[in-house]
Image (tube, rainbow, N blue to C red; front, side, top):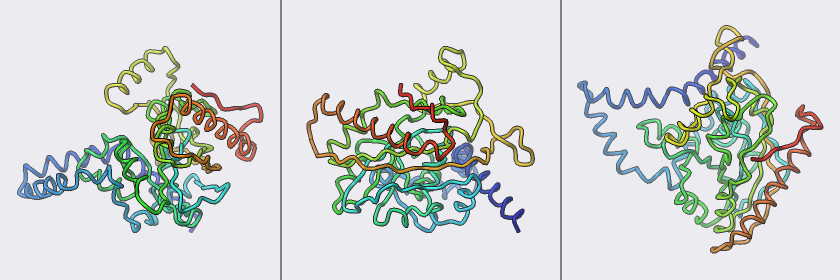
Amino acid sequence: MAHSRWRLQTLAALQWVFSFLGLGIVCIVIFIGLFFTCFWFLSMLYSAWWYLDRDTPRKGGRQIQTIKRWCVWKYLADYFPVSLIKTVDLDPTQNYIAGFHPHGVLATGAFTNFCTEATGFSSVFPGIRPHLMMLTLWFRIPFFRDYIMSGGLVTSEKECVSYLLSKKGGGTLLVIIVGGAQEALDAWLGSYTLLLRNRKGFVKLALLHGASLLPIFSFGENELFDQMDNPSGSWLRWIQEKLQKVMGISLPVFHGRGLFQYSFGLLPYRRQITTVVGKPIKVKQNINPSSDEVDHLHQQYMTELCNLFETHKIKYNVPPEQHLKFR
Protein backbone atom coordinates (compact mmCIF):
# COMPACT_ATOMS: atom_id res chain seq x y z
CA MET A 1 0.00 0.00 0.00
CA ALA A 2 2.77 2.41 0.97
CA HIS A 3 4.76 1.52 -2.16
CA SER A 4 1.78 2.11 -4.46
CA ARG A 5 1.11 5.51 -2.87
CA TRP A 6 4.82 6.35 -3.25
CA ARG A 7 4.64 5.50 -6.96
CA LEU A 8 1.48 7.57 -7.45
CA GLN A 9 3.21 10.55 -5.83
CA THR A 10 6.14 10.12 -8.22
CA LEU A 11 3.82 9.95 -11.23
CA ALA A 12 2.00 13.07 -10.03
CA ALA A 13 5.33 14.94 -9.83
CA LEU A 14 6.25 13.65 -13.29
CA GLN A 15 3.03 14.91 -14.90
CA TRP A 16 3.44 18.28 -13.16
CA VAL A 17 6.99 18.74 -14.46
CA PHE A 18 5.83 17.70 -17.93
CA SER A 19 2.95 20.19 -17.74
CA PHE A 20 5.32 23.13 -17.37
CA LEU A 21 8.25 21.93 -19.46
CA GLY A 22 6.61 20.08 -22.34
CA LEU A 23 2.83 20.36 -22.41
CA GLY A 24 2.85 23.78 -24.08
CA ILE A 25 4.96 22.48 -26.98
CA VAL A 26 2.72 19.43 -27.34
CA CYS A 27 -0.36 21.67 -27.46
CA ILE A 28 1.16 23.80 -30.24
CA VAL A 29 2.08 20.69 -32.24
CA ILE A 30 -1.43 19.26 -31.89
CA PHE A 31 -3.09 22.56 -32.81
CA ILE A 32 -1.00 22.99 -35.98
CA GLY A 33 -0.97 19.28 -36.83
CA LEU A 34 -4.76 19.03 -36.86
CA PHE A 35 -4.86 21.45 -39.80
CA PHE A 36 -3.14 18.77 -41.90
CA THR A 37 -5.63 16.02 -41.03
CA CYS A 38 -9.29 15.33 -41.64
CA PHE A 39 -9.90 16.88 -38.20
CA TRP A 40 -8.76 20.34 -39.37
CA PHE A 41 -12.14 21.75 -38.39
CA LEU A 42 -11.35 21.16 -34.70
CA SER A 43 -8.49 23.65 -34.84
CA MET A 44 -10.72 26.03 -36.79
CA LEU A 45 -13.43 25.81 -34.15
CA TYR A 46 -10.88 26.27 -31.39
CA SER A 47 -9.45 29.32 -33.20
CA ALA A 48 -12.90 30.91 -33.19
CA TRP A 49 -13.31 30.09 -29.49
CA TRP A 50 -9.83 31.43 -28.79
CA TYR A 51 -10.68 34.75 -30.43
CA LEU A 52 -13.95 35.12 -28.54
CA ASP A 53 -12.26 34.15 -25.28
CA ARG A 54 -9.09 36.21 -25.80
CA ASP A 55 -9.71 38.62 -22.91
CA THR A 56 -10.51 36.01 -20.26
CA PRO A 57 -6.90 35.55 -18.99
CA ARG A 58 -6.73 39.26 -18.13
CA LYS A 59 -10.23 39.33 -16.67
CA GLY A 60 -9.98 36.89 -13.84
CA GLY A 61 -9.40 33.72 -15.82
CA ARG A 62 -11.68 30.73 -15.49
CA GLN A 63 -11.16 28.67 -12.35
CA ILE A 64 -12.66 25.19 -12.33
CA GLN A 65 -12.97 23.86 -8.79
CA THR A 66 -13.26 20.25 -9.97
CA ILE A 67 -9.83 20.46 -11.58
CA LYS A 68 -8.33 22.26 -8.57
CA ARG A 69 -9.54 19.37 -6.41
CA TRP A 70 -8.13 16.57 -8.60
CA CYS A 71 -6.59 13.84 -6.46
CA VAL A 72 -3.40 14.08 -8.55
CA TRP A 73 -2.64 17.41 -6.85
CA LYS A 74 -2.89 15.81 -3.41
CA TYR A 75 -0.38 13.17 -4.52
CA LEU A 76 1.85 15.98 -5.81
CA ALA A 77 1.71 17.83 -2.49
CA ASP A 78 2.48 14.62 -0.58
CA TYR A 79 5.48 13.90 -2.83
CA PHE A 80 7.61 16.64 -1.24
CA PRO A 81 5.51 17.23 0.99
CA VAL A 82 4.06 20.75 0.64
CA SER A 83 2.30 22.50 3.52
CA LEU A 84 0.57 25.86 3.88
CA ILE A 85 1.00 27.75 7.16
CA LYS A 86 -1.30 30.57 8.26
CA THR A 87 -0.02 33.13 10.76
CA VAL A 88 -3.19 35.27 10.91
CA ASP A 89 -6.71 35.15 9.49
CA LEU A 90 -7.44 37.09 6.31
CA ASP A 91 -10.55 39.27 6.17
CA PRO A 92 -12.69 38.08 3.21
CA THR A 93 -14.08 41.61 2.74
CA GLN A 94 -10.60 42.92 1.87
CA ASN A 95 -8.43 42.49 -1.22
CA TYR A 96 -4.77 41.46 -1.06
CA ILE A 97 -1.65 41.56 -3.20
CA ALA A 98 0.74 38.89 -2.00
CA GLY A 99 4.42 38.77 -2.77
CA PHE A 100 5.65 35.18 -3.06
CA HIS A 101 9.34 34.48 -2.34
CA PRO A 102 11.50 32.88 -3.60
CA HIS A 103 10.64 31.85 -7.17
CA GLY A 104 12.61 28.62 -7.10
CA VAL A 105 13.16 26.78 -10.38
CA LEU A 106 9.50 25.94 -11.10
CA ALA A 107 7.58 27.90 -8.42
CA THR A 108 6.38 24.62 -6.91
CA GLY A 109 4.99 26.02 -3.67
CA ALA A 110 3.12 28.82 -5.43
CA PHE A 111 1.38 26.45 -7.81
CA THR A 112 0.56 23.72 -5.29
CA ASN A 113 -0.80 26.07 -2.62
CA PHE A 114 -2.65 28.65 -4.71
CA CYS A 115 -3.65 26.84 -7.91
CA THR A 116 -4.88 23.61 -6.33
CA GLU A 117 -6.71 22.52 -3.18
CA ALA A 118 -4.00 20.01 -2.32
CA THR A 119 -3.07 21.89 0.87
CA GLY A 120 -6.64 22.98 1.64
CA PHE A 121 -6.36 26.67 0.81
CA SER A 122 -10.13 27.30 0.90
CA SER A 123 -10.31 25.76 4.39
CA VAL A 124 -7.26 27.61 5.69
CA PHE A 125 -8.45 30.96 4.28
CA PRO A 126 -12.24 30.76 3.89
CA GLY A 127 -13.80 33.37 1.63
CA ILE A 128 -10.52 34.18 -0.15
CA ARG A 129 -10.16 33.55 -3.91
CA PRO A 130 -6.50 33.11 -4.95
CA HIS A 131 -5.14 34.03 -8.38
CA LEU A 132 -1.51 33.36 -9.31
CA MET A 133 -0.12 35.77 -11.88
CA MET A 134 1.89 34.37 -14.79
CA LEU A 135 3.68 35.75 -17.85
CA THR A 136 1.25 36.65 -20.64
CA LEU A 137 3.32 34.54 -23.03
CA TRP A 138 1.89 31.30 -21.64
CA PHE A 139 -1.69 32.37 -22.38
CA ARG A 140 -0.88 32.57 -26.08
CA ILE A 141 -0.52 28.79 -26.34
CA PRO A 142 -3.66 27.02 -27.60
CA PHE A 143 -5.29 24.50 -25.23
CA PHE A 144 -2.55 25.11 -22.65
CA ARG A 145 -4.08 28.51 -21.81
CA ASP A 146 -7.36 26.84 -20.82
CA TYR A 147 -5.56 24.28 -18.69
CA ILE A 148 -3.62 26.83 -16.65
CA MET A 149 -6.63 29.14 -16.28
CA SER A 150 -8.56 26.29 -14.69
CA GLY A 151 -6.21 26.52 -11.70
CA GLY A 152 -6.67 30.26 -11.23
CA LEU A 153 -3.66 31.47 -13.20
CA VAL A 154 -4.07 34.91 -14.78
CA THR A 155 -1.86 37.25 -16.79
CA SER A 156 0.60 39.56 -15.09
CA GLU A 157 -0.80 42.65 -16.81
CA LYS A 158 -1.89 45.81 -14.99
CA GLU A 159 -5.27 45.49 -16.68
CA CYS A 160 -5.78 42.14 -14.97
CA VAL A 161 -4.86 43.58 -11.57
CA SER A 162 -7.29 46.47 -12.02
CA TYR A 163 -10.10 44.16 -13.12
CA LEU A 164 -9.75 41.77 -10.17
CA LEU A 165 -9.20 44.39 -7.48
CA SER A 166 -12.07 46.56 -8.70
CA LYS A 167 -14.66 43.83 -8.20
CA LYS A 168 -17.04 44.51 -5.35
CA GLY A 169 -17.14 42.37 -2.23
CA GLY A 170 -13.43 41.83 -1.60
CA GLY A 171 -11.86 38.44 -0.97
CA THR A 172 -9.44 38.56 -3.92
CA LEU A 173 -5.85 37.43 -3.36
CA LEU A 174 -3.44 38.22 -6.19
CA VAL A 175 -0.22 36.26 -5.77
CA ILE A 176 2.79 37.76 -7.56
CA ILE A 177 6.12 35.95 -7.68
CA VAL A 178 8.02 39.21 -7.32
CA GLY A 179 11.48 37.94 -8.31
CA GLY A 180 10.03 36.50 -11.49
CA ALA A 181 11.88 34.46 -14.07
CA GLN A 182 15.18 36.20 -13.38
CA GLU A 183 15.19 35.03 -9.76
CA ALA A 184 14.94 31.41 -10.91
CA LEU A 185 18.59 31.72 -11.98
CA ASP A 186 19.51 32.10 -8.28
CA ALA A 187 17.53 29.07 -7.10
CA TRP A 188 20.43 27.38 -5.33
CA LEU A 189 20.43 25.08 -2.35
CA GLY A 190 20.87 27.30 0.70
CA SER A 191 20.39 30.52 -1.28
CA TYR A 192 18.30 33.25 0.35
CA THR A 193 18.98 36.10 -2.07
CA LEU A 194 15.80 37.72 -3.35
CA LEU A 195 15.36 39.97 -6.36
CA LEU A 196 13.31 42.62 -4.57
CA ARG A 197 15.28 45.80 -3.89
CA ASN A 198 14.15 47.53 -7.09
CA ARG A 199 10.90 45.61 -7.66
CA LYS A 200 8.32 48.19 -6.59
CA GLY A 201 5.56 47.80 -9.18
CA PHE A 202 3.46 45.52 -6.99
CA VAL A 203 3.71 48.03 -4.13
CA LYS A 204 2.44 50.85 -6.35
CA LEU A 205 -0.46 48.64 -7.48
CA ALA A 206 -1.38 48.04 -3.84
CA LEU A 207 -1.49 51.81 -3.27
CA LEU A 208 -3.52 52.47 -6.41
CA HIS A 209 -6.17 49.94 -5.38
CA GLY A 210 -5.99 50.11 -1.60
CA ALA A 211 -5.16 46.39 -1.41
CA SER A 212 -3.32 45.05 1.63
CA LEU A 213 0.21 43.76 1.01
CA LEU A 214 0.85 40.20 2.11
CA PRO A 215 4.38 38.77 2.43
CA ILE A 216 4.77 35.03 1.76
CA PHE A 217 7.95 33.01 2.17
CA SER A 218 8.24 29.44 0.94
CA PHE A 219 10.89 27.52 2.85
CA GLY A 220 12.55 24.74 0.85
CA GLU A 221 11.64 26.23 -2.54
CA ASN A 222 15.27 26.48 -3.66
CA GLU A 223 16.17 22.95 -2.60
CA LEU A 224 14.21 20.92 -5.15
CA PHE A 225 16.76 20.91 -7.99
CA ASP A 226 20.49 21.32 -8.58
CA GLN A 227 21.56 24.04 -11.01
CA MET A 228 24.63 24.24 -13.19
CA ASP A 229 27.11 26.84 -11.89
CA ASN A 230 26.06 30.24 -13.27
CA PRO A 231 27.68 32.93 -11.12
CA SER A 232 27.28 36.55 -12.15
CA GLY A 233 29.72 37.33 -14.96
CA SER A 234 29.98 33.74 -16.22
CA TRP A 235 29.29 32.91 -19.87
CA LEU A 236 26.27 30.81 -18.92
CA ARG A 237 24.73 33.58 -16.82
CA TRP A 238 25.35 36.08 -19.65
CA ILE A 239 23.50 33.84 -22.14
CA GLN A 240 20.65 33.19 -19.67
CA GLU A 241 20.16 36.88 -18.96
CA LYS A 242 20.20 37.78 -22.66
CA LEU A 243 17.60 35.10 -23.41
CA GLN A 244 15.52 36.26 -20.47
CA LYS A 245 15.44 39.81 -21.81
CA VAL A 246 14.46 38.63 -25.32
CA MET A 247 12.00 35.85 -24.44
CA GLY A 248 10.71 37.02 -21.06
CA ILE A 249 11.44 33.63 -19.51
CA SER A 250 14.62 32.35 -17.90
CA LEU A 251 16.25 29.06 -18.78
CA PRO A 252 17.99 27.66 -15.70
CA VAL A 253 20.09 24.60 -16.49
CA PHE A 254 18.94 22.26 -13.75
CA HIS A 255 18.46 18.63 -12.84
CA GLY A 256 16.93 16.60 -10.05
CA ARG A 257 16.40 12.87 -9.72
CA GLY A 258 15.18 10.32 -12.27
CA LEU A 259 12.10 8.18 -12.41
CA PHE A 260 13.94 4.94 -11.59
CA GLN A 261 17.15 6.28 -10.05
CA TYR A 262 18.08 9.15 -7.77
CA SER A 263 21.23 10.63 -9.34
CA PHE A 264 19.99 12.49 -12.42
CA GLY A 265 16.72 13.47 -14.08
CA LEU A 266 14.06 16.16 -14.25
CA LEU A 267 12.01 15.07 -11.26
CA PRO A 268 12.37 17.32 -8.20
CA TYR A 269 13.98 15.92 -5.08
CA ARG A 270 11.64 14.87 -2.28
CA ARG A 271 12.31 17.80 0.02
CA GLN A 272 9.79 19.55 2.22
CA ILE A 273 8.27 22.86 1.15
CA THR A 274 6.61 24.98 3.83
CA THR A 275 4.84 28.09 2.57
CA VAL A 276 4.25 30.60 5.36
CA VAL A 277 1.70 33.37 4.80
CA GLY A 278 2.55 36.42 6.87
CA LYS A 279 0.62 39.30 8.39
CA PRO A 280 -1.05 41.73 5.93
CA ILE A 281 0.12 45.32 5.74
CA LYS A 282 -2.88 47.64 5.58
CA VAL A 283 -2.67 50.04 2.63
CA LYS A 284 -4.74 53.18 2.19
CA GLN A 285 -5.80 53.81 -1.40
CA ASN A 286 -3.89 56.55 -3.18
CA ILE A 287 -4.61 56.96 -6.89
CA ASN A 288 -1.56 59.19 -7.38
CA PRO A 289 1.18 57.98 -5.03
CA SER A 290 4.51 59.79 -4.97
CA SER A 291 7.80 57.93 -5.37
CA ASP A 292 8.52 58.61 -1.67
CA GLU A 293 5.24 56.96 -0.66
CA VAL A 294 6.01 53.95 -2.82
CA ASP A 295 9.54 53.72 -1.40
CA HIS A 296 8.26 53.94 2.19
CA LEU A 297 5.71 51.17 1.71
CA HIS A 298 8.25 49.05 -0.16
CA GLN A 299 10.68 49.36 2.76
CA GLN A 300 7.91 48.43 5.17
CA TYR A 301 7.15 45.35 3.07
CA MET A 302 10.80 44.24 3.05
CA THR A 303 10.94 44.68 6.83
CA GLU A 304 7.81 42.55 7.33
CA LEU A 305 9.20 39.89 4.98
CA CYS A 306 12.45 39.79 6.96
CA ASN A 307 10.51 39.50 10.22
CA LEU A 308 8.49 36.61 8.77
CA PHE A 309 11.67 34.83 7.70
CA GLU A 310 13.47 35.39 11.01
CA THR A 311 10.47 34.23 13.06
CA HIS A 312 10.11 30.90 11.26
CA LYS A 313 13.55 30.02 9.88
CA ILE A 314 14.73 27.87 12.82
CA LYS A 315 11.63 25.65 12.55
CA TYR A 316 12.47 24.89 8.93
CA ASN A 317 16.16 24.08 9.30
CA VAL A 318 17.61 27.41 8.27
CA PRO A 319 20.84 28.21 10.20
CA PRO A 320 20.44 30.96 12.83
CA GLU A 321 23.18 33.04 11.18
CA GLN A 322 21.39 33.01 7.82
CA HIS A 323 19.48 36.15 6.83
CA LEU A 324 17.67 37.33 3.72
CA LYS A 325 19.67 39.28 1.16
CA PHE A 326 18.11 41.63 -1.38
CA ARG A 327 19.43 42.70 -4.73
